[in-house]
Structures are given as C-alpha cells and as structure tokens.
Length: 377
Image 1 (cartoon, rainbow, N blue to C red):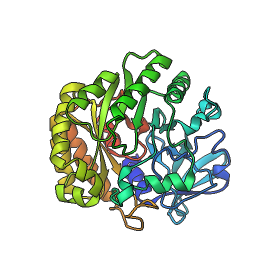
Image 2 (cartoon, helix red, strand yellow):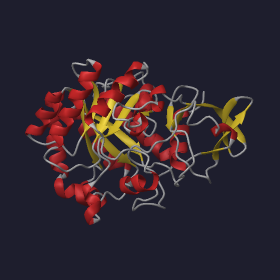
Image 3 (cartoon, rainbow, N blue to C red):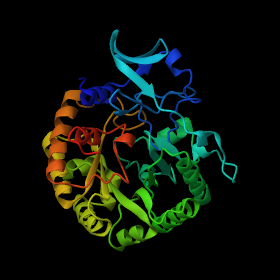
C-alpha cells in the first residue's frame, strides 16, 4: 500500500505542476482556485486556472500548490489523471468536482464564487473581510501573504454582505456535499467583530433553518466575555489562530498579533473556550514547520490535554510573504512529527469535532490524515 501520508507531505512541501491536457476542464467541470484568503502556491499564476485541490486513491485530499519546477507532476493518460515523480508513475489522482452554485449570483447580483468557496470536498469557507490591520505598520505575520494575494488576484469581494453569505450557504448546502462552514475575518481587530459575526450566523440560520450552525468561527483572538458571546451566536465551534507555540518565536514571527494577544493569553482564552463550547469544539490553527519538533509537540500535548483540537497547516514559503524564498522542512520531518502528534491527540481522547473540521476539507494539513490511520474520522 502506498504511504499516502508521506506523499501528501511531499506534494505540499515540493509543490506540483500539470500538463495542459489535465487542466482543460478546471474551472468548468472541476473546482478551481479562487484565493478566498491566502495564496498557497509557490508562485503566482494570474489568468491561469488551477485546481484548488485533488484526491489520492485512498480519499486523501491534497491542496494544489503550483511549483513549475516540482518533480511531482500530473498528466492526462487515457482519460485518467496520473501523478508522476519526474517520469515515474505513482498513482491516479482526481480533481474535485466544481459545485453548481459557483455559476450563480446572489439577489444582490454578486457572483457566489466571490463570496464563499468550497475547501476540499465539504467545507464552505467565508472570509467576511479580506483585511489585516497588522500590515499597516509592517507587523504582519512573516508567513502571511493575505494582502499581496488580494492585490494580485482580486478574485473575491473583499467585504462580504451578510445577506449574500446566507444565500451562498443555502445554495451550497442544497447540493448535498457541504457539511460545515469555516468563517473568518482575516485579522479584523475591531470591537464590532462579535456583532458582525452574530449577523452573519443569523443570516445563515435564516436561510438554512439551522438551530446551531455546523462549523467554526475564527475571529481575532476571542477573550473574556466575548467567548460566550460567540457561543450565543449559534456557531458550533470557535477557532484560534495561535500560529506558533514557542513563545519567543511567536513574538518574532507574529509581531503585530503578539502585541495584541500573548502566548499566555491564548492559553487562558482557549481553556475558557473549551469550557463554553465543549471539548473538540475549539480549533487551534498552527503553522507547522516554523518551529522545532519538540516545541511543536509540546504545544500539541498542552492543547490536547485542555481538550482543544489542533489544525497544523503545512507551511510553504508563499509569494508575497516575508518568508518568500525560504525552505520548509522535509516531507519526512512533517510525516514523522505529525504521526507523533496524532499519538498525543489519540491518547488524550480529544473528540474529533467532525461537525466543524475533518480530513475531507483538510488539503493543507496532515493531522486528520494521521488520525484517520488510527480509525479516527
């Protein structure tokens, strides 16, 4: 049996390319990238439609990260898509089908694809405002390319209408493949964020009939009484973009964010969030590959003991970020480390929280895939 976990890690760290024939139906039959928040590719590709993600033979979802120099390449061969390492065939892959609602407009005459996009196979993603206040003072996270991505592609409406978000949710759910939403505001440091999120969730409930909305809200770090306020909106789970566990490295990597929320404030808030939302319903976003294996696993251990789930995204040096041109760790490092992380999560019996995040929407992370090997879906 192929080691698809290692293969996914290799593709995410080395990137991928495709021949012309394999890309012909991307944007019509198959789902294309739409850059709802970040650009994950190794290089920009304006006016070139590429797959958003694809599946391996065991159902593993892999994010497509363009690298025109990558040894991993996809070619069309007898009406099938085959993945190669240079000229050596590895396995068949499949682009993910494009949802019908991508062709529709809202009652405000806005293209639905510019409001919300499908991540992987079953996660509906909204960034209600593509903005980060930390870029103003050159204090953005060093791995982040949110602003440059927005300027380069200009492929989404930067500030979304609440009514539009509700309509897109209803349209996406009616197709039968979406299971949860992921909502963020970029880095929207504003006292009114809870109010805006409340209006968004209310619109989603109005258009779908949900009592509680399955999915995650990932706002600017929620603290104090705001945590309860987010729960009261009716969202199933809450997320924290903690990024880096090591305290000093966090401060150096995320200068603006760390000024507003310290490492210890994150931990205190996460503990409170778990008490309010319940174990498995608090998701911690980490950028895996920026710190040592030991500090990363220490973070996994602490957060898992608290009862929080961790979503460690595989870092790549994205264009437009301050770390552009750097190198991520090897695929072997990612695989060995994530297997140890999965052991920790499994031993702490953290509920998988499948109503807010799962392996089907996880094309840029490895933990759900490693847990799936243990029978945790």
